[in-house]
Length: 478
Image 1: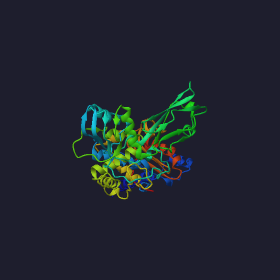
Image 2 (image 1 turned 90 degrees about the horizontal axis):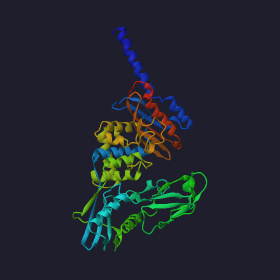
Image 3 (image 1 turned 60 degrees about the horizontal axis):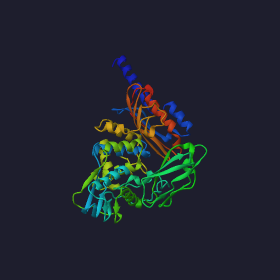
Image 4 (image 1 turned 135 degrees about the vertical axis):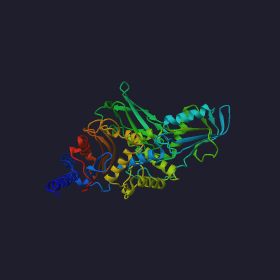
């Protein structure tokens, strides 16, 4: 070999080593942001790759397993879009058991759930309206709710974080009505010196204070100032006041007695629509005959958008169990985990080894996967037929969803966010100033993870700013 070619080989090797070393170091602005947040660099894992490439602009502790929190929803929603298809829908069949004479059903009304995550009050109203359009104004028997499609262990809603009235702690259910929550609204009426209180949906036998006094002062801890007591399932008490400076506000609250929620909601809505019920609302099994009609949910692509844009844990759990029901033969957590494990192995091969799947939402202390595994999942999604639906479901920096307060350049990043008491992270796609698109994954696991958002925003902005304008390098770990 002559000297000149030999020097070219040495130069190329040197450039590759330099690029690799650069990829294994955090940019200075990220170090600085971590220091300001009092977070050690070892609390962060990162991968930044151009889409379609296996080479990294940045790979920091990329193979270290971490708790991804709600980034788990990327796995659940991508798998659902891939296995079920973006146009897939849930069906809720309805039976009218018995004869109908002069508006009276001499028998039972039966509703069978299949896991629909969007059985909100408006859609239940439409379902019951359809019953009335079929000539039923009075039901002499019962309204029977079939919830057998899912097999979910009983749990205390306070088990995860001691917050039983947080809507995200609501348990999944085959017939999940309105997320088993109520939405309290507060509208100031200055002339009367009160805030008018509304509740939606109405629940039979549950009383709510219709107004609270208006208070002075800033709108800070307005929920605390209401001095709410929701422990009594038959009475939602508000013993405090509502700051007039707050304007209109809404407060979603999980109902204190979830077992009676469906009964109370269906009863109240049916009677509010002018219907009569001779029996009760109870659980039971649907018949094997053809239903009178079927209510169909919005398309999966719409549901996935709501799951990811707003990190809806309950909807994610419904989707998770739906995968088990439709691809694993059982609407149970065990079947759902196995479906996801099998699908992940098909998509990532041996790179999926070591992933720990607990549930579909990330509301877990047990889930584990690495930044590199998340990056490979996003690379797989980018090359898939469902990429447009998945990417469109992600929050957009500074624009909507859980990224509305992001400090990165507005509109340039589509990223799922994840946060728990000791977890903060993002994962998704970033469009850089040079026109390149990057997969970006960044997760902090640390007791002070709540302070990590500026460092994560700085990393996203670094990717937007052409990812340091450095040549791509092979993956390296630190």
